[in-house]
Image 1 (cartoon, helix red, strand yellow):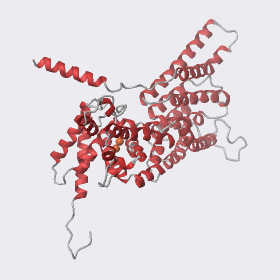
Image 2 (cartoon, protein in one colour):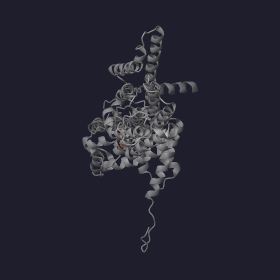
Image 3 (cartoon, rainbow, N blue to C red):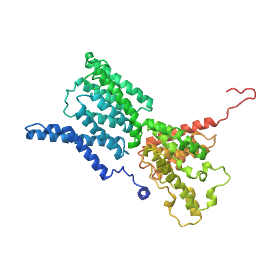
Image 4 (tube, rainbow, N blue to C red):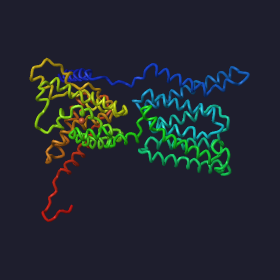
Length: 490
Ligand SMILES: [Fe+2]
Ligand SMILES: [Fe+2]
């Protein structure tokens, strides 16, 4: 009997699971794939063609060219795979940026290598990649850009190669963590100084020349001018990073923090036109931030995503309970649950329109539909049932998709718990609060909303504890301190 019940439960779960959209991997169009492949071929040809220029050409030379060509092509493929692994939502434009930078460096090596130090060629692109796509992708790019150095016209000093790898790795690792333009500026001064000192120690002091020297910038092997050129190249890169951000849709930490500025016009509008939603947003930011910190997720991403998740409510603020003053509810006047459900869905659709208009990065815009997932609008569904309307449950579900990342899933859970925690009695115990949180999270989980988020059971437990900690803070803030008539100091 128990087996039959279990089988039914499983079948019911599978049926329910089939009703929510299946996780869609990032689809790169055939044309984009073809362009990326052609650029990889171009990189391989440019890097290896010199092997075919030997005369007389022997079979062994052709074989060695073929081997190098394949090695470079495979390396480019590995680079793309690493970037996809680190950024599952990477777009074709971003992949195109990574391999175009590789192509540009290979061309620059062939045409300028005898004049410019490899440090100035490899470190600035590593900074762009680490900022936009993360440290691991940047490290992979650096290794491949250094490995497939086309047959150099100058002999690369082993020490110089070592310094290049150390400096490029520092830039790749720090670049992925840096949170402001000021820190980037510090890095662009720090790295050239490190490269200058290490070259001085490892390569030799006698190669330092003065600024007045004629071939000041293009003098290869000149430690001082090489380091200065590196500093200038890095400063220019920092200047151009915002342009890369908008062309290739990169989401750097600095851009995230800029977007999280509450003086941004869209957020100001939210605070003025939908003050209730703005308050709800701030509380959710607190809940989501604490939970993300607990599980080691991307705090800057969730803080910014949470700020914009309900901007779509600006299309009709007073249709949402948090903005109503209690006098009249437009949904009661409308008296049509199907239309009311459409208004609720519109806050997602309009939010996406606001995101497009304000050029919000895709990773931030994803929070708008995914925080609602395919949740049921239970209240209006119930009303429609009471009215005996001819309805389908899916008319009363958000269109989704369900959360595709841990961050958007946390936001969905925070969104669900916020109102319940706010409404909770100030005298409620921790146990009661935890029970409320657990019930809400369980209902989302049971509804299949967390299936694509990759949240583990352990992480869900940590999220509950984080929400409870925030609730304790809210409760503490709401406790009135006793004041005496004669004593007004605090
Ligand atoms: Fe919402
Ligand atoms: Fe919300």
